[in-house]
Length: 520
Image (cartoon, rainbow, N blue to C red; front, top):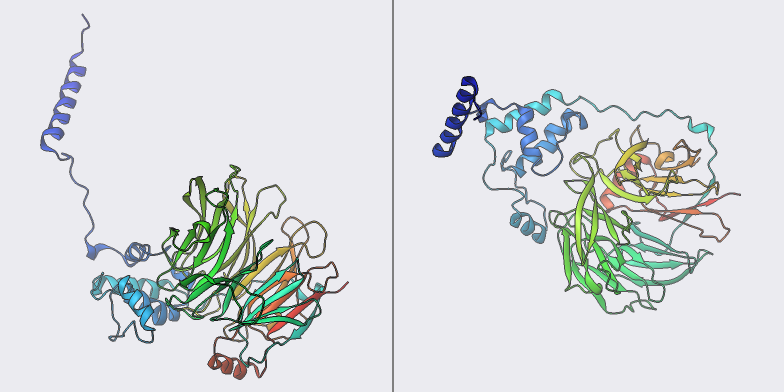
């Protein structure tokens, strides 16, 4: 017979009593942890709590004090049901967008926070935001590097307001497709207009098939809107001659990609409907709009690429979401049309994400990410030191580590190619300036980053002051000399904006296109 010590017996009986008390009372017998009341939360704690309902928490240091207090916080307040001076959040919206905002309860009628809580949040940002943001730090000497391109202007059509929203080079035919508002042109290697079409709205993307006519997407409304007037169609042979529309009533679509996503031997399509308050990222079986599968039911889908990222011979999806909850997401293909969502990067809501490419910078067999941020047209149109070009290296397991940053105000796009044929990837990047001030040199609205190896880049710039609002950029051998060239497209949203730029610069004409051809 095993003898139990008195001390151990007391311990066992005590433990049994404790378990029975918990079981029969159904509650924890330990004293409850004292919770804070709403009045005890600090402004930072409240900001973290409410801001992160919709996006990554933004630190006060991201914007200056004036922008926080007079612009960003009033908008955030309306999204929490706080009305400053009885301001109507729907004022100026088109009816469709206003209806979507009401349906999604973007601006609640009743406050989600007390006025005391809201004032603590405002005071927190007032106290810790800087008076001004620091200027971007540049360590290079731009006079030292030779610029390898020669700049040439080109104007096409008769539009008095340049609005280039689409540039796409067809390497098979050596032709450049240019979308300028409602006109779509095809330019050959001699700079001649070979064909043109009239569109129902500005073009946003085009894809060339091996044995089919080009697939063209139109945006619908150019500015922020939830109108569903975007389309997708096969481009016909002559002006105003298009095959039947494949997709209609799309919500401000900006990008698409085709592939056999469910591996049934038929092509599917992935569409980025950026929208405004509403939007989504969806794929459609067999290019059939009635066979929709929604991957992300949020606005801001901007760009997608299709890759096999885990080596299982299934096409995965990489997507950039650039509205509110800015992030890059991998959707891993699990087979049978099922995808598993895995965010790999998350950005703050004033980051201004707008473009990415997947390329292998360090030639280790795993694709890295080239990412730009510089969208500056919302509630904080100020110069931000964190705008620019970034390279994130893949650790071979699809975790991405920031390894290079080139500061560039209002950066709108960057593309990586081997321009000098030395075996590594160089970068070209553009800016889409809202306005001009002493911080913005028009020479730096385009930069060529020559790769010296090991992500050591030397920047060079256009020698002349060329004013352009570069929204679009494309790379290709346009003049068929076996060297890669670059073309930039100007987009001015309206005549009021054009007038403001003219007043600031004294420049009264902007080239629709600027070709940068390599000099041998």
